[in-house]
Length: 312
Image 1 (spheres, one colour):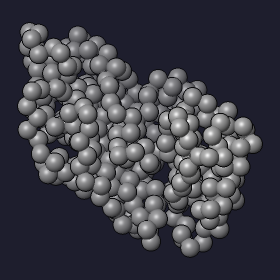
Image 2 (cartoon, helix red, strand yellow):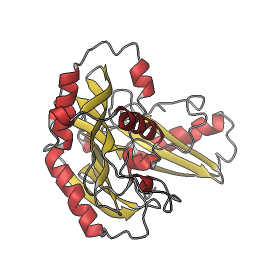
Image 3 (tube, helix red, strand yellow):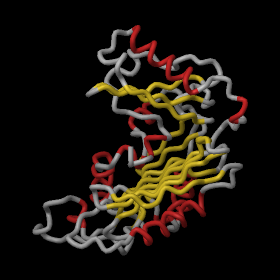
Image 4 (tube, helix red, strand yellow):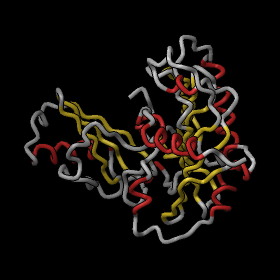
């Protein structure tokens, strides 16, 4: 089934402008990827259709690929697929349009990132599925079951205990369910996160990450106190207001996205009044991994793993 051109244009507009909680999907924008000169691999339209069909359970012929790009091992695909029958009329995608003429949703946009080397899903975003309605009948247990099915389908077996964070209700009508890997009580960097609509029960987004390194927590040489002191000294040296009186906390992640090699890092949080800094410290060397100049304008950002926890 080929999708009407007007529907495809609508998909692209809504996909680029779909509001979402950053801490939920942690899905990067695709514009920089599409323009990345390093994206020298090619992917055919048929290959892109097959990937989207595999992720969304639709027939490949029902997938209309709108854009695609490859960067290293990561494929990013924007596509239109037939709308799920549970979706409400198009107007439910934006609050305040309840009195507008109701338009049946015939197509929905999806964005898939797929790791071709690992033959594994990285994340998927259904941009039309954040919908608003007076009734939000989906229960936390129902949201959990949908999230559990996604994780069971896509997340591989890993040598870590995947600890559940129960469904968390967001201000937008949806739930977030997350699992984080732990080894001897230490975060491994493995994670699976799903956002589920409280209106329809459909998944809005799902993302996952498998740790790329698995060091023994007992063999990490840098202590928590040493990591805290490294960040405190950095902030004081940079004359950051409130650094001396700030509160400091740290969490060890054995494979952190804030480490240039995705290795072990202490993620240090410093806060004093309106000042908030999140700075990784290499857990093997004790070196702070970013400078304050690099973090300018990003004080509210947290580590990729921590950012998936909506309770932060």
